[in-house]
Image (tube, rainbow, N blue to C red):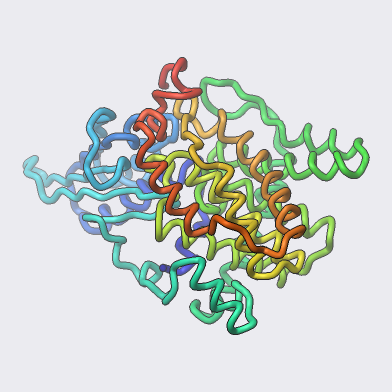
Length: 403
């Protein structure tokens, strides 16, 4: 498994696969061809189907247009074999002759792959010896250590500085989202709800207030993402509101130190990394179960660790967080990361806290392991028809035309 820095990417929304990935690919291609006279970019499959709503074209044009004219070709019905999010970059010289073409895939969470392999960067090198939850759980039980300590043993020392920056960006995003009002960009004219949820929550008694505040924090981050704001993929842009909402709420209500929050982030990152390595976190590949479902598992594990859960209880809470999102489709209305994405983040944050409570009533022993759920999630995603995997053609998106 790669560093969890690859999972927690700081960037701008609304989509890790459709915005952050293509932007990064454009930057790499431009640096390789600084003297090109013009560029052409072909977008395939899911990347093309919902690309306009996800601002894929703007992400690419913002990088390449300052250097040369750019033509973008959309091929939503053409899927390349390796991954639904494929794109080909072509550079031309002054005579119109093609210099080079490069096909690259945006495989989820802002990550890129070429010919089925991650791009060769220092942070994409495998640094974890174990990549199955069962093996890491056994290591924890044998050594007496916790998941975050396994992360500490595998990562460089600068991880904690990076996670501190991640936590800062998450908190800043929540605050911006709570302060912001108005309508989100796009044809849906969807009003922001975070601020009103926050205000209403303060008027309720403690039990309802707690849940309302969690909702407001998740909405705040997701609405910032939908507006193209600065967020952290956790594990993706479309699911970026779940983990910050849970951690922010627990720190505010239980006074957990930043040190303990960073350790919870490390454990959550390990959970996301396991899924990313053994299945997928791409909505275009496995549906929303790979985004919001994984985010819920990450947040559930983080919460259980904060409350002193055993490694077995942490594994159980993560398993429940993912298991009960199995089969969730990715069906963004109008290709926007708004409906149903924003509400799903709020609901998953609440479910993560429920999974923590449920696991705390147990000894952590259960029949279906986290590894098994990851395996089932991968197979379920492959069995889903493509119209339920971010093409904007099925489910809730069916009766809405694209932008």
